Image 1: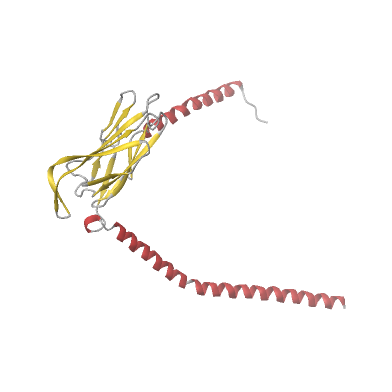
Image 2: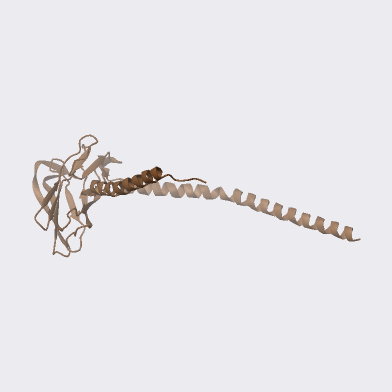
Length: 251
């Protein structure tokens, strides 16, 4: 029988108390690390059109988020941006002249979307403490010749506080207010508009593979059927042999 000494009991209580105090700290730290404006997905193919969703959490304890602004790049611009309606919010895409004209499908473009601003229509629609909201746009074409696009966000609260999510990460250290970043991948096809075609090709390939696989199921089915018949025959023969021996013994 094991016994617990008073010293061991006190040590156990101290460890349990330390763990209980450390757990809330870890939870709060994890919450603070994840509570910032992010963009999903975090990567897109150059030349393609991307559906981007900005997740905006409310970090204030007693104020609501009433306005969100996402600034778009001007040196490597999106030439087209459209917004998905958010109930209770009004969205506006602002245009601005480009530093240098760009050519899109043979047409020279001198201005492009510069920012998207969402404003809550009333206090009930604002992002309350402990809540978050998603804002989605369709943007394209994703610029070529860059590795990433920084998309700074500005979050305005009902008490007048303004938080700028515009800091760029350096090394492995994350800043206090990191800006959302969209990483740019090489175009899958020339011009970057072949995503649907690639998906269609993959679907066709998958169908063909399934067809080839179904051809292999016939020999397997026949083999399984033969094995089943063999087992039935063996069981029948065993039962008949047992009955014969029983009758012989009774005589």
